[in-house]
Structure formats: structure tokens, C-alpha cells
Length: 445
Image 1 (cartoon, one colour):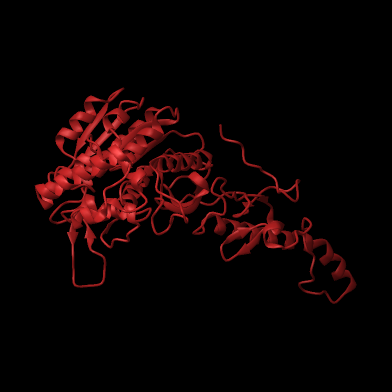
Image 2: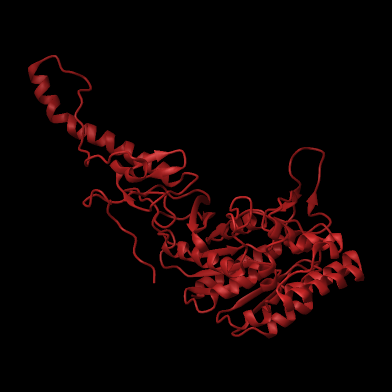
């Protein structure tokens, strides 16, 4: 059950809350806001004394020259100054609500009278608290709607090797899956990013659906703390916390939601959706039916040959049986970074997941999406997942040139001699069909 957020100031109980302290979470009125270089704080956290509730000021703007004018001006000024002050406050908080960082990860600041309808989708940067108290940033993308209108939403769950809230590891290199896993366990910053999550958010907004995409723990923006290890359970808990955030946003009201996961994020999406009555559908993009270890072994056999794949299978078997990966110097160099020291438990949990079991626990329709040219997620994978569905769903196969990220292989990464990042050519037909399915599923809820 979600606890209602306080609506009055912690220091001035008769004053409405307009913001929240970014450190302690206290509700703040206008007079209690202390703006800092890292966001809004409260007087207690900054040492600044809270003021008494302010009253309308009465300065002399144009001093009259006659006694009669003084009396007349005294009667006129409070209304004029109050209107000016009120306009300044409204403009300040209207701008603040659309700033690059939400001061409150749960409650949106409200502006009396409301802004005009948005001409185009709006992005709001915010953060939530994930497993273990980890603060995680994300982007809420809102479609162009009238003020006060609630909209349905999609939670986008990152998969292997998410570079940030926008991008995944490019599917172009022959060892793409290996690279993605290495970037996850090693926190390696790869340069070949593909803004799949941002593209999906923009497409959803075009059909009137909000979305939230967030940083994955262990990435550059959300680094692990000293002594902290990656955990699949923590990744699931992070996704649930992100759902809680969406559930409390006033822009969404009580509207239904869909969870979309890419790659291994599809499994996380399945776990989050199981037993959640507000979730009306799950989208699994490029999610295999086989355990991840088997998928990666097949990829290595294709790109590096049988001996490397056999060495990887032997290493995963050792990890499964003993809980420890074999010594790095006993492994082929190409797979050594996968078994990064300190992440044995995380790898073991990833390799042990059976997606066919996970999808069978989901009590809402599931959309299975696969790029036609994806070598890692095969037609057999999709058939196995489809056969395991509990209440039905749909299989969507993209273009015969679409890869693991629904990017058109061959023409999907157009490099030039300029410093501009390579262009991405997405499988727009599949993307449109995906957003159409999501919208229909949300409408049925």
C-alpha cells in the first residue's frame, strides 16, 4: 500500500506543500525552500532558519506628492502588489516543475490555474530510491495532453549492459552479447551506444502514453558503493521502486501501466508484473527462452569457435556447482572479463534464470518481440516462450534486417567522417506495431 504524501509544510502546518527536501524528504512551503547547487533543501538540512509565513509586502513604488494621493495609493497598492507577487510565484514554480531535476521523486509541484496544453511531449528528470537505499535517476516522458488529464504509462526496464537510461550496447559487433555482459559486471563504459530506450519513450509519447526509463545500477551514473555487489534481486527491487514512483505521480493518476523489458530486462519485467493488479501487460523485447549462459555459449561458438564456447560452458558449470568462477588465467582471454572478480553470485543467478518459467507466472497478456535478424534470440526462443504463456499474448517478429535492438542491420549504423554520432535506423514498422499493442492493452484495462 502506498502511503499518502504530506500536503502541508513541515514547519508551517497551515501552508500547502510546494516542494520536498532532496535530503530528508520533508514537505516544504514557499518560505522554507532553500535552493542549493544540488537541488532544493530544507532549513534543517542546510542550517538556514525557517521564516515565518510571509505576508503581502507593501513597498512604495511611486510615492505620491499630495496627501490625497497618499490615501488613494494606500488603498490601491496591496491589490496591485499582491497580483505582481502572485504572478512571480506562479512563474517561478511553473518553471521549477519543468526543470531538469524534479525536487520530489513522488509528488509533482502544482501551479494554480495550470499551464497551457503541451504542444509536444515533455521530459521530466527525477529520481527514486532503489534497493539498499541507492538513489537512481530516471526520465519521465509525458505526452502532449491537457492540464489535469491523467495518462497511462509504461515502465522501461533496462537489460544487459545498459549504458544509461537512454542507450544499450550496440548490437553490431560480433561479440555484442559478451560485450553487454562485460559492461554490466565490469562497469565498463563502452562507446557503441544505441538509444533504444529513448526512441521507445518518444514513440510511446506520440500515441498518448507516458513512460519512465531509468539508470541501471552499476553504470557510470549509478556506481556501486564500496563493498556493494550486483544482484538480480536488487535489479528487480529497483524496477518495483520505479513502479511505485509512477504509481504516485499525479500526471498518471490511477491509470493502468505496462512493463517493457529489453533482453534480460524482459525477465525482470515478468517478475515485477506477476501479482501486480495495476499491470495490464508485459512487453519482452529480444528476450530469449534459454538461460543466459546457453545463449552466450551459442554466440561465442558462432563468433569465436567451438573451443572458446566449450571453455565458457565449463566455466559456467564450475560456477553453478561451486559458487565460484574458475581462475581467470585458466580461461581464454576473450571470456575472462565476463567472470569479473566479486560478481560470482550475480552471474550464477543470471545463468540460472529460466525465462519460460518466469513468463508462465505472468497473469496478463505478454507481447514477445524479436528482430528478424537477431542471432541471439531465435525463432525457436520465441516459440518456446509463446508456448509457456499463462493467459495468452502475441508474437511480433520485426523486419528480416532488424537486430537485437530492432535496428536495421547493414543500414542501421551510418558512419560519417564528422564528429556526429552515427545515425540509427530503427525498425519503425515494428516499433509502431509495438506501441499500438501497448496502447490497446492499456485501453482494455
